[in-house]
Length: 326
Image (tube, rainbow, N blue to C red; front, side, top):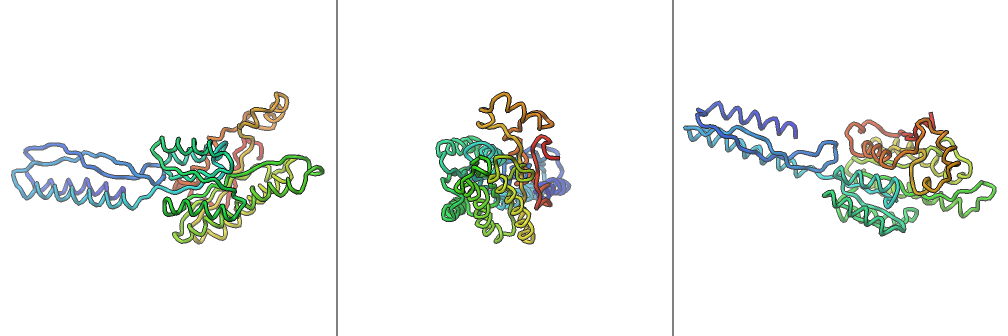
């Protein structure tokens, strides 16, 4: 688009040299260019061109022809630019909600996945639409293969493709290992790890065909250092980190970037219910001395998902934890 816009100025100047511009007036030329930040959506941009009303008719018609050519080229280029399609799992609350809203504001078309919170998911979708974006909701359990296939199909049927996958859905069933039931172990592994596997495998099939895509997995610092009372959760998140690195190696030749984000303590409904003593002990382990905000995690995810500066990053784990893990 930069070359098209630049040629516009050259064309106008070149045409003006052939005329005697005794009468001049400014005209507005409609151009189209992508929104900055790499979101893929487009917006109108008005530029000012000098139109010479010449005594020589051939010069005047020459300027008009140049303007028409530039306008046509700009329109054709704009039609080729499509807003990225993003799937965000577990997007009805917390980090998932913040990610969905951030990508929606950036111009992405967002599928808002949820398991049970349909009302909250609809509110997220409506908020994205209030920004002028596009969103659909999809209720489904990402630990079930049929639900995942239906979710991918919904995105493809609605928008034609999948460009970005954010594997965020997760649950906790915390208890000490000696008291942990097999069902508590399995529920967490099924959703937090197997769900990432199923969604990644399904979305990658679409991305491989166009040799382009971004996959961001929401892991956790406990997947790096462990945490008492979270053997199931820690194992699942460590698995996500290992899966991220392996998938990044397997799909790099297809231009698919795969990275993981590992949050620390992020403000949520759960942290809000902690007692003062527990909260004090937690904050003492965080060098920055505070909880992170969901929007801060979403900002990092946005960078990895749509910023061109992230195109050379793959197979990495980004901790966003206020300095807990150094």
